[in-house]
Amino acid sequence: MSQSISSKGLEQFIKDLMQEGKESSLKGWVMEDILRSVLDLYGSPARDYAYDYIVKNYGPQDERVTWAPI
Image (cartoon, rainbow, N blue to C red; front, side):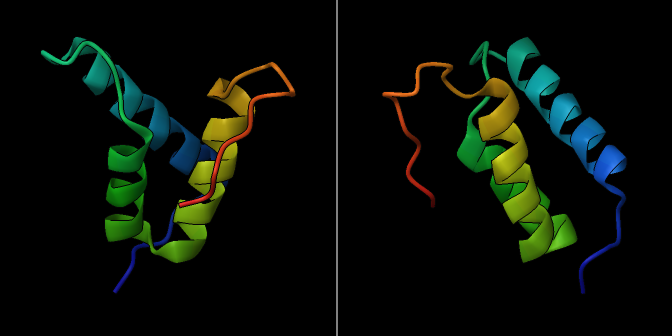
């Protein structure tokens, strides 16, 4: 069963995972890994929110570049 979380709490969770990725040996984060963590803890609606949040706030700013949904 999925846990409940507010949108602000989810956004902070995403930022925390991004920071962990930056501090890891990889020196970066992988959206697929973040989305999997969100899905495992909070379910599909939260994963969809996380996807939109990441694309909107951290995706390419060039309109010619698009992201394919997973």
